[in-house]
Length: 196
Image (tube, rainbow, N blue to C red; front, side, top):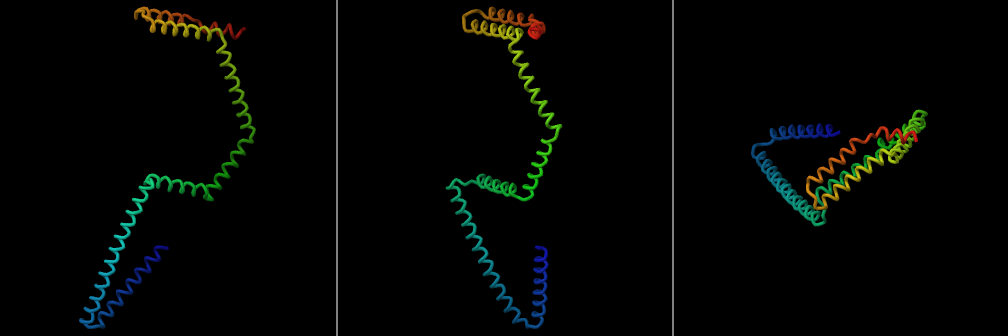
């Protein structure tokens, strides 16, 4: 549509140019000079008005900017508001609404399939099984043994660090606890718990 306006603009400029040319030929040089002087005067007035309007517009923009600053409205706040309104407009658009409806329908269709039901059921069963096994592991003799040895090592180190014993004693106690944990055979303890 803008293209048609451009064409009509150029057509009107061309017509005016032709009219000017034909008028220029029909009038004498003195009359032509008088007309050109009138046109120059009108052009100067228009340019002066345009300059005045630009100055007024700049002053109004500066005044608006100052008021926004006083109100705490920054460029970032304005940008956030513009984005918020843009996103809201997109969400409310017919295309997005139709897409959401279609996705919802697909989700319901998938959720109602037998494969989805079986997968969901299997995942729930696996979660319950894993939770039960973790509880069994925490209650096993092996876990309790490791927990006791680590707790003992921590208590021993804490006691020695807070006490006034030498660094050699702390290091030897730490090595002793580490050796105790290394010697521990977890597989036999877990098997004993599992059999029991």
